[in-house]
Length: 186
Image 1 (cartoon, one colour):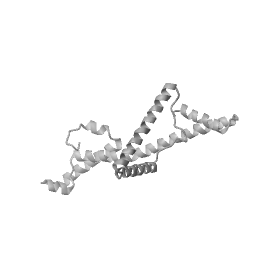
Image 2: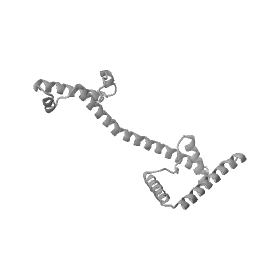
Image 3: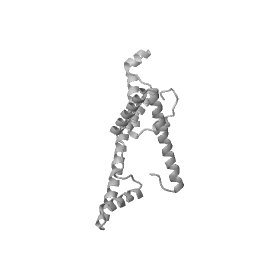
Image 4: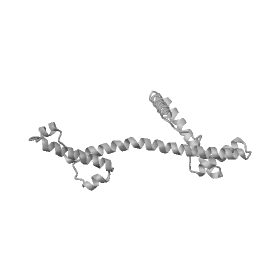
């Protein structure tokens, strides 16, 4: 709409709630009353009186609806994460304590509880999660590595590249060896 394209009224109203449509209609009625009371002869007078076109009212309604949706989106996402975390904790604890009640050791009960989480298609309770601080630390480490690499002499840089190439070759040979023997790669 901001680009000047025509949009049918049914398409405009399809994306808005009843309250938003009512607010949009009320804003248009207010504009009509304003136009009856104050006649403008030029565009400058229209702007001074606060006249708006129907398109401008629709755009404002959409912007308000979008802002409301964005505000609610974060809350809904957080609520969904909380529910998933509660469900995972409940499944884990139920399985853990039922195994403990059967007389199993703590590590066996822990493994059984983790298996239940896996069956429920949930992540492990002790899974490593990357948080904002981890991202910042890794970014700083990468920046330090880049700075060190930039300040290396050509000989040091060549040695580093040879060492990295050697490490890659070792890693790929380990994968090939494990694939031939049928052992899982760890």
